[in-house]
Length: 383
Image 1 (cartoon, rainbow, N blue to C red):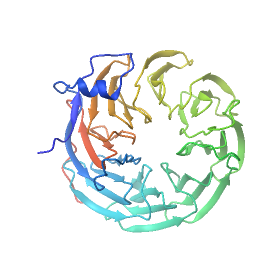
Image 2: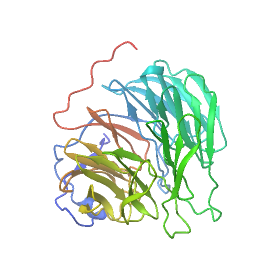
Image 3: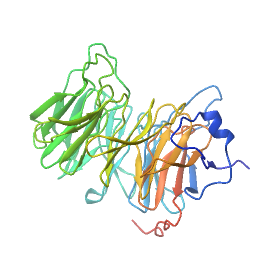
Image 4: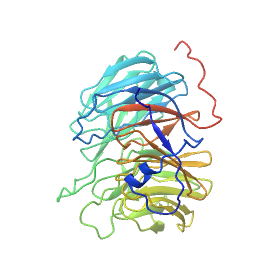
């Protein structure tokens, strides 16, 4: 019988770790992550082929919504992984969906160039909005409007109920076309929309009409890979955002002026909790800064390839590695507790509903993982 997963306790911390050395250190599983169920969403890849799955999951605590590169979009019972419904999209799914209880809808973008609104109970299509570029980031919902970015270097605002166009904002793509895969999801806050673009700019727009309040470059002196792909985060009156070439910025949300900058290449979306700023960077690992931008700790994850944005759960921080799997570290010290490896690596960002953690492996297996002591999701109800 094929094993569901391998869980390994890492006995080193604060140092570089290669894939082979980690695999050689498998011991009895540490009591951090526990597999509750899994589902296979795509066909087994060829041995010589290195697949990647980018889609992250969203859950309301009872249902889990996730797509895959095969174009299937699913709703699973969070308790046991049973399929509640399945909807086929045009093109694969690389984005995290957005569930909105007020609309009883799940909004998800496709690599084929469309945003879908699906009935959260049945999976029936409410509407679809077609465009020319892929939708690879999570849509945002506010006051009856759904906002999302596309591969056209454009932000759209649609009526969430009918899918009717409200406005759009465009920026020119870089002339040299040297950009990084992925796009910033918009942050909607206090009547404003904050979003990054592949030309290195972060723009602040009015939520009502898409008018520019301010726009500023975060690319520094870079002439390529200038992308602002990290989704902006707001905490304690400060706007945090990452630029691939420019690093991590703390900005004044009123005018975009810089409060501080941490210089690092390839920073992910930033997470902020309990007076600390967390992010990952492929060449440099997992980081924790204080609110003044000073480094508190860094956990190197060498040979792991592309790293996801971190997930903060209780006293833990989790990050996925395209070549290796998902790491579990102590949020305060960076000490590595556990390594979840299942054979193909994990590119997709881990997500949680507070009871379980969800990850989609590059081999197409979707896992529900529990933290020790976590309560099981409630029994399935009639939706």
